[in-house]
Image (cartoon, rainbow, N blue to C red; front, side, top):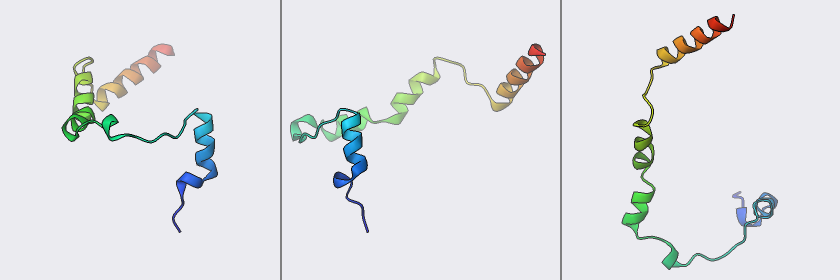
Length: 73
């Protein structure tokens, strides 16, 4: 039996907790498909962050953790 989320108690709690209100979405608020695809492109969101900090391997992380533990002793 599918659950009707719109009539559930959980949903009503979420709406009141997050101060949400139900309002219809007009088609003018939805961007065109190409623009929407560009906005939701995860590579364009993630890749710029990669250049900000150097990537490290799992082994480098383990070595760093080990060295910090040893220096605390």
